[in-house]
Amino acid sequence: QVQVVESGGGPVQAGGSLRLSCKVSRYTSSIRYMAWFRQAAGNEREAVALIYSRPGHTWYADSVQGRFTISQDNAKNTLFLQMNNLKPEDTAMYYCAATPDWVTHPLKPDYFTSWGQGTQVTVSS
Image (tube, rainbow, N blue to C red; front, top):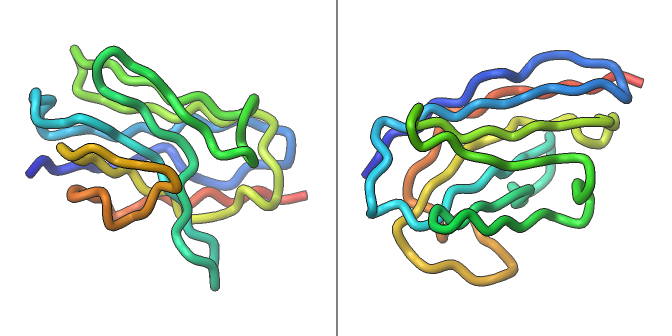
């Protein structure tokens, strides 16, 4: 099981951008998918973006499609989430997750075996 650590969150005004990073302890062939989830206060944890490690296919929630981009740098063992045109409703704790298993949609947190502590994103209007 790999360890993941998120960074890059913070306060931002609506319309602004942030890039979240997720450092993975080691990229191994055992990682099949990596994803970003978010959880707003009082809400369930929801999937935001997913990347299939090889060959890099991606999926996005409708709410972020066209604004967020998930990517990975295998040489640096790092996953990214570029977030543009942020909205107040994007305010949440953002989590990085990894799994060696196949997943299906709708994505569920239970599918993922490795989680970080999260990084807070707060978007003000």
